[in-house]
Every structure is written in C-alpha cells, then in structure tokens.
Image 1 (cartoon, each protein chain N blue to C red):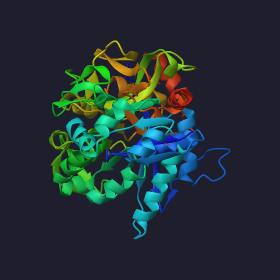
Image 2 (cartoon, each protein chain N blue to C red):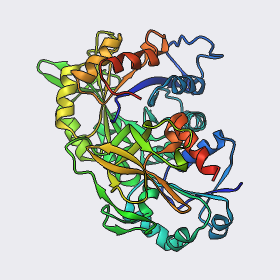
Image 3 (cartoon, rainbow over the protein chains, first blue to last red):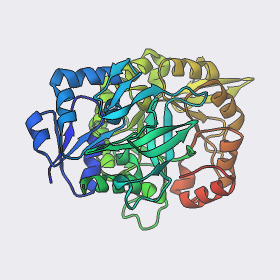
Image 4 (cartoon, each protein chain N blue to C red):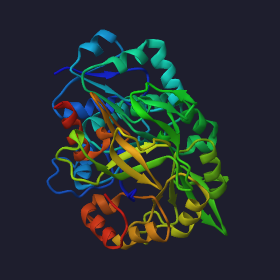
Length: 192
Length: 250
C-alpha cells in the first residue's frame, strides 16, 4: 500500500499522517503529480478558506489531477468541500466531483459548528461503525444533502457529513481526530 | 446533537506535567503524553495544555511535546501559555496542535487575534480570559490573575470574537481553586452575547458543578484539572451522570 496525502499548503496535515501511523501505515506528504497518481490511496485534507485553497490547487494543476484519479480518494473537511460543485466561501467553483454546493450556516447558534456531533452513516466508509457515533467537526460552511450523501449530521438543518461517488469519498468531520470511530473509518477507507 | 465537551487541562513545565496527578498504573505521572493518552482513552473530548515554563529552551521543548502528543492521541487539543508571536503559532500547529490559546498577548496587542485568524483560520484561535469580580464588574487580569487590566470581561469577549476568536476560555479567578462550582451567571451572560463556543473554567469540584455549568451557565464545554488528575471525578462516571440529566455527551 502507498498512501499520498496531498500537500497544497492547507494546514494541519501532520494529524492525518500521525493517525495513519497509529494504524500502522506510513504516508507521503506530496504535491507531486506522479507520486499521487501512482499511490494506492489518496487523502485530500484541508483547513482554511475555500477560494484561496482552490487558487492553490489551480496554480499547481491539482485541480485537474484530482478529479481524474481512479484509486480511492478521501477528502477531509475543506478537502471534501472543494470536491463539490461550488462553495459560497469566497464564491468559488469546486472540483465538481460531488453534485452539491457548499453554503454557510445560517443559524442563531454558534458558528463554527465545533465539537462532537452524531453522524447517521451508511455504506463502506461506515463498516463496523456504530450508527449515530460522534465525530469531531469544525466548520462554518456545509455541503447540502445530495444524491452522494452517505452520512447525515444535524446542526439546526441536515447537512452532508460524508459523501461517496465511485472512487471518491469525503467527510466533513475529522476522522483523524475522532477517536476510535474515526480510526475505524480511516481503516475502512484504506481497505478499499 | 452537538455534545457538551469535557476538557481536562494539563499544566506543563519544561516538558513535564506539574501539579500532582494521582493516576494509578501510570509509569510516570509527570509524562504529559502518557497522561494525555489516558484521558483520551477514558473519553475526554478535548485536551488543553498550558505551558508555564519560562526557560529559553521553552519553544523547542514545547514543539517536541506537541508533536509527541499529536502522535499519541486521536482527539483535538489546544496549546497555550506564553504565545507571543505568529511564528509561535505556526510551529505549534505544524507539529500537530489543533488550536492555540492566547491570553496576555491578546490583551496587550489585540490585533494578534486577527493575525492568527487570518493566517490559520478562526477555528484554531482560542482566546483565554481570566477575570475577577470587582464591585459589579468582571475585570480582566493577567499573569494568572495577579495583574489587573483596564478591560472588562464582556466588552473584551465581544472584541475578541469580532477580531476572530473561534472560542473563548473563561476562567473566573474568584472560583478557580475553590472547588465550589463555576461562575455560571457570568458564563450565561457571556454565551448570550457571543456566537462562538464558551469553555467554562475554574471551580469544578463535583459532578453537580458540571451539570450546573452546562444548564445554568449554558457553557459549551467545561475544563478542569485537579478533579481529574486526582481521580476525584472519572470522565466516564461524569458523562453517565450528565446523560441522566439529558445533557448530550459523546
């Protein structure tokens, strides 16, 4: 197995690498197209602002590389959001993999939505995961529920906490920071 | 439902935990990594590390500690204590910290809050506020409550959030160390006027105090040190009692 973590300057990628190491896997942090294309699994992380992250992907050609990948790809948090059609954050287009749009929470409650919330999940990512387990989330924007949704979370409204389409997967929450259930989800992804 | 969070706090000096800890079966109670792992396994929702060392080696020691902790645990953690510059924040986050907590530096130079938020995102900026009630006002203090400032709690909290704080950690100096409960009235007022999560700190002594701070104080999270370190309250036991009160926990 060879795992690439896409490095495009979008913060906190050590955590995901450490989480994989705890599972007994090593991963390469890289922006190199050849390494990414030849790896068995690709993780697309991200913390930060959508339009500037998208600009970084464009400047490195990753915006065309990622949607063309054929091995299992897991987008996490902003990574997942960038795989959607568009984001209201900085009014940017996305990679168009998941057929939905990302919008800001319109709620009187706290934004960002921060902490542990339940996810009603299904499908391969959630194998051996108790339904309605809690996962750790930090985000101000969310993906609207859509035909690719495989995990739903509620914060005033329902949003897509996990999505899957062909070889592409995404989680709004941080599996690398979500205790045992998060570790199980990463394990599930790596078994694909 | 979004859960209320339970956050053990570890005081760190020169890479070791200080204040007593009373965990059985720990090979070395002074090892913060081992303690952090124990808390994560017991069901803590987050951890806070507060570095109180003053040595010149501080930054290097802290960065290594953060890395060791990030490698060991699978829950989020915040690092605070003496962060004065944007570069300090970058080093901590690069080594795997999820958030940084700033206190004195933010009071002295409030622009620093927005600088961190703009560079690394609001989600990683926790502004810690220590305050003491004097007459009818909550006055913000520095240096562990020793030095009073001109700032008042509620105004300062609103300013901090406007400048980009993603979370507030409010410690009542009047309650801290008393084990007589959290400053719930002030906490409720605080959570009414800001739109970011508020962490209650100072005063935890019993399980009832946690119930009260979540219900009366409307706190989003509660932080405590000694009740956890001395095993006066177990995290699972605490969470079971919270659930009985219909308080959402993980």
